[in-house]
Amino acid sequence: MRLLGGGLQALRRDYQLWIMIAPAIAVVLIFNYIPMYGIQLAFKDFDFTKGLTGGAWRGIDYFKQFIDSYLFTDLMRNTFLISLATIIVGFPAPIILALILNQIRRKRFKNVMQTTVYLPHFISIIVLVGMMNVLMSPETGVVGHMMKGLGLGHINLIASTNTFIPVYVLSDIWQHCGWNSIIYLAALSTVDPQLYDSAKIDGASRMKMVRYVDLPALVPTIIILFILSMGNILSTGFEKIFLMQNSLNLPVSEVIATYVYKIGIVSNQFSYASAIGLFNTLINFVFLFAMNAASKKMSNTSLY
Image 1 (cartoon, rainbow, N blue to C red):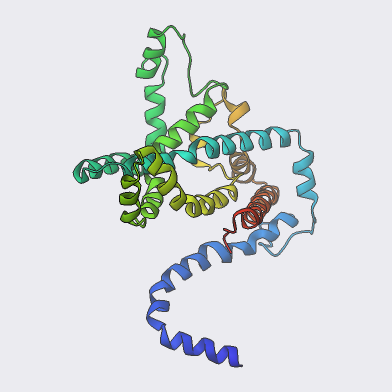
Image 2: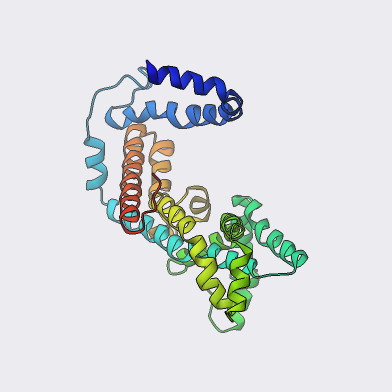
C-alpha cells in the first residue's frame, strides 16, 4: 500500500510528463505488446475458422521441423554472414565519420558536410534499390561500364553470389552512416573544450586529441550501441534484401526474414512461419543478454 501511495503521489506530481509520453506508451503497447498474443500460433495448427485461440496443439513440432529442414543451415549461414558483415564494417563507419566531422572547425562547411551525409538516409529503400539496379547494370549502368573499362569483365554485381553481400553492406553504410553518426556527434559535443586546450598546450596533435580525448568520451555510447546491434544479430531486415533478391543471388540472399515471408504469406503456413520468427527472436534475445552481461563484467557499462 505504501508503494502504491508513493506511485500515485509521483503520478500527481509529474502528470505533465506522463501526459507527454502517453502517445509513445500507447504506440509501444499497441504495436509491440498486444501482437505478442499471436505468439501462440507457433505452438498450434492455425485454423481460419477458429482464430488465434483455436487449432490443435503442436508444441515444439514446428521448431523441430525448421531445425531439421534442409534449408536451416543455409538460412542461418546467410543471415549470420550478412549481419556480421554489416556490424563489422558498418558499425565503425559512423564513429569514424563523427570523429572526422568533429575536427572541422569552419562551422558553415561543417553544416554543409553534415547535411550532405544525412541526406541518403531519407531515400526510400525501393528508390535506393532501383538506383543500384540502374547504376550497376552490366549493359547500361555507369558502374558496369567502368568495370568493363578497367578490364574486370561483364559482371552483374547484384546478381553475383560473390558480390551480393559487399554490395548490400556498402550501400547500407552509404545510406545510414551519416544519420547514425548523429548520436556520436552529440556525445562529442559534451566534451569539455578545456580538454582540447590543455591537449594543445601539451603539444598534442589532432590524431592524439582524437585518441586521448574524443575516443574515451565515445566509449560508453559505443558500448551501448554495440550491445543493441548484437541484439539484432539475426535481424538483417526484410525490405532491402527482398528487393535485391533474384534467382541468381538466391543462394546467398535467402535469409530468415525473406523465408518467413515466403512461408507465411505466400504459402499460407502461418504457424510454421510464426515458429521461425519466434526462433529468430529468441536467438537475438540470447545474444543481447550475453553481450550485455559480458559488457557489464568487463567495462561496467550495460543496458541495466
